[in-house]
Image (cartoon, rainbow, N blue to C red; front, side, top):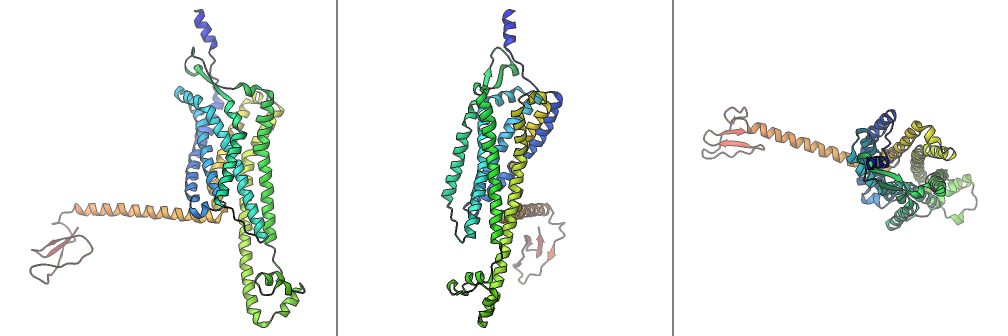
Length: 436
């Protein structure tokens, strides 16, 4: 009796959420989160198949290939982490709980690494675009090889692994053999998490500054610089610049910068050339305006998605740092807020396809071509099924009752040479052709 009481005192019951909180988590994570994840995974796989085209892969869009892979990883880890947790809590499934407890220490590390790598890959894409715009404005060519982009991606992944390596030590599994069911094992925080310096300075300050604040500021500055550079490129050039650009007058022969003098001094035989030059200039300005529009849309999309995903998380984190008792005092609000932060992360990862489709002409063209190919394949498949049904229907007709019977006069009494495009049964005795 004493041994039984001692064993029962060792057992720690699993802390299930309250019914109201559980219902909220069920609809927010299990229903909405699962739907967003599955749609996002399908969209990321489709986007990955588009971005793996050779002409796209060898450009700066190569980074988006790695970003699509990381998005798939983030969406997958969300399902294995949050959806599975709601599943075993709502349906009290011990099998799902046992699997979740065993793989969570490693999966937690993978999740943190993918989130960190995703953020800095976005920064790498934006920085390369800034270099291209700046060099283009200065008349230089930016040639970044595919191998160099591979090096950047590998460097980002190595940095993410090093920065988040300690998270592999934050969770551990506590086994209690004397207990049964949910009480026999627990996923608990390791000893390092209880250290004040680690919890406050690394988990809160370092994580939020390095993973959230610095990338956000970098994205804002880089995108603003990109827009400023493109606006400078959109400035209409003077007639002097136009003539020098199109080699209508050597730069060292221009004595004055007065447009009136240059236009007056141009020989009449070059007036037609000036007209075509102005047309070329108008086309260049139109191309630049399109580039400005695309850059502006991309900036709005990137900054807005990043802002929505991380600002709420930053507010909750700062509040938690100022008031450590906040999760206990406002337990229901804190739980829903944490779930909303996780949901916004997967929404951000699932929105890549519409963002790239709206902002990038190359990706939009490839997606349209891929969708048109799917439509053609569907039409071909439907027509093949219809042809098969038509052939099967006419095979079942009796030759005697077929309304396709026609009489054919044979030029020769022995044989009948009939050229038809459809299958036919030729009866030489009655000289009748029967279509089937």
